Image (cartoon, rainbow over the protein chains, first blue to last red):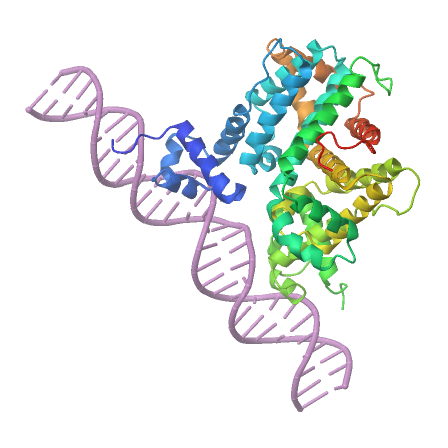
Length: 215
Length: 215
DNA sequence: AGGCTGCCTTACGAGTGTAAGGTTCGTCAA
DNA sequence: TTGACGAACCTTACACTCGTAAGGCAGCCT
């Protein structure tokens, strides 16, 4: 066979490439097939239908996030590494977060992931309630940061000029744009700052009984 | 005229109702028109095209978030109120966040909003760099929390049972599901806990020079 | 009466997921 | 060597949905 033969995995990889290029709604049977130099109907020999492709894609993206190593030193290092990995993967595939909402069933990869992260926190001495607080906080932050990152690119360079024009009405925005346009500034550092702030604050409350008295 | 006549605003309201019911991609000219007991082409008398509807919708949603009052007591109360309002609006229209990414130009409402929030922080004594850190952190958290909230509903009730079944492999998830199924637990409280943690941590670093020495 | 506004009808061309069936080709048994 | 089988891939076609261009018909205002 001239070109290497199709596989479920090769179909999923192609779908991911298509989405990386054209966003989530660019995933259509015809376009995924074209990515593989193949016709649309050929995909159905390796995948039951389009929903299966979408489900497979979210699982594949999630699998690309490093699992936290178990039984390690400081819980903050472990969580920081996982968060950095998640941010890297999710911002490389910025459509993935939107896709995860529409897919209802979490998938085994996802569950195993959360289980491992929860394990790290529990082993570090977090109560169940505090571990829930911590995971909700950290995941919200990581996901939210990725979203903002995705809608950024034009915000600073292109829109920056427009804003400076009508600066009279928006003085504080002006300050920030100037700050952000300075050479040394990188939005990526912002992620680390916020994450460290979170982790330090959680460390302070680690063994303190819950403020709301719910455990 | 029997039914009250169409308006740009009534079209936008209808589009929002359609999206609330069927998600973002449910917004089509035909369906929005149907919501108003009207044919698709009638909308074009009040709106140039579909993109204008989408742009108008994001602006309308953003306008529903309360602007922070200026010159008020503790900055934390102001920011907390704005965050709560943002969460309420964005989780009532859980498709809105995904839409804001695809629309490139921030829109004047959006800019005014961020300007006001930045003003509160600056007046409270935050340096420019710290204000950027704070806004990035808070917005990431709010947006991320809304996303997680949107993909929740089945996570606990329906999937909860499935998870308890294969509990052997996922012991920590089991703990959490049990914890979350207890009567007193409400995911909404989770939002307040994380937010207060953020605000307290930011208060601690308010006037401290930036850890990374960037100002 | 004439025009203008507000809404409707019809229609086009492009895109979607996928059902049904045809073609090519490697593998293996007789 | 031959012939059959089945997997992998292609072609065609159906029944949608989409945004919107072009033009028609009613009723109100001047």
